[in-house]
Image (cartoon, rainbow, N blue to C red; front, side):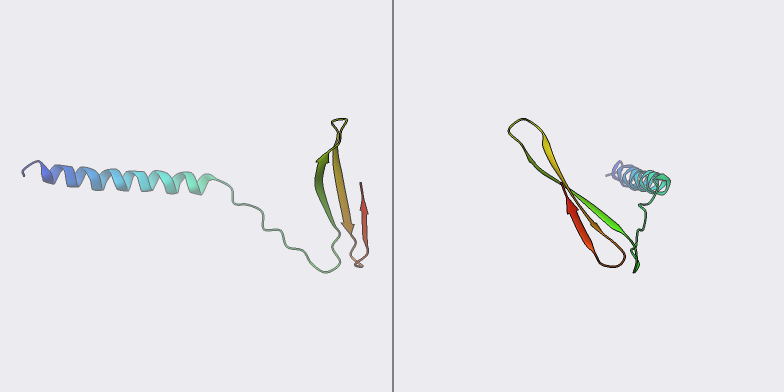
Length: 74
């Protein structure tokens, strides 16, 4: 039972060291951009369609203008 105290202290120290390393790395990573749309913004959405028989991939796109007009193309 004498060695049990060292195990507990070592485990607690290891846990604190791991948490400190996690928060240090987490703080260094940049946060994702907070993109918010407002009325009048233009938005373009691209969708990847199925592959054709000749091996090409179809790309669809839709554009929503600020005045709510929608145009789609491929």
